[in-house]
Length: 346
Image (cartoon, rainbow, N blue to C red):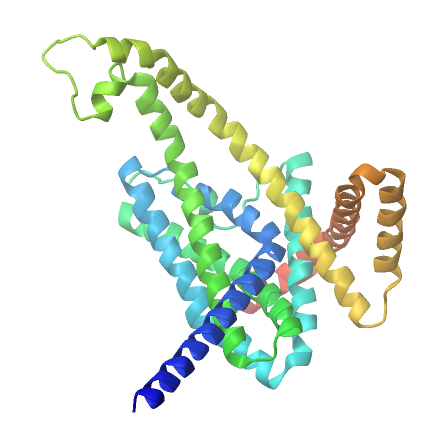
């Protein structure tokens, strides 16, 4: 009896080790797949803060919370089952859909670059609207949240497509693919909207620090009242906290602009890279080989930084390719696709 029990425990331990190894492997694959979606993640973090413009400070975090739940619903309820079904019945369609998504990223990135160089009155989606006099605040908030969730659906679809393409190349197990897609979907959503929450509240924190004459007393719940002056610790720390607060207030608009530029560049890089790799899958490898050879040549010229230089050259070439594709798509979308959609809706 004892021998059988020991054998059973040994089997349980073995199964636990296999499960742990599978989980580690899924986590590693999810990390690699998530890294490939970096361009979309950065752009999402840069775009989302505009959806809380015009609201009271106490509504900002609840709005971000609603958008986060909507994003999780997009990924886990709609896109994850669709991606798994696609991998089962039409795996050949993954690459074309991925290239279509890459073309969308190129278009969005080129459109943002065009807007930055030649500003025009158009804005995309409800993110740039502000509350008008007499408008119902609740309806306005719902409109903003729904607009953000619709935008997130497009970006989430591209994230899941990139993840599926990466996972499909590394594992054929249905359940491994499901777990990895879920890990990436949940992880990226929490990271993106956690960062967005920090960005949105950073200026409020900065104002609070800049106006607080008793930082130490406030920190320990000893806020001085009744005209009692701040203590020595408050006077000692106050210049630092006020400086940090003013720095946050001053730097956040600059940070958002930089983040927007980085997000645009990352979209072009990811979109261009997706299209180049997709073309290689169909035998059109000249562009990919040319970029690889150029990156290797430049890397050999700087042996000490070869890996970093090769990555930078590859990313830059992919970004330029994405910009060219996007520039070609802008007139097509504006003068052909959008008028057709308007007529269909009408």
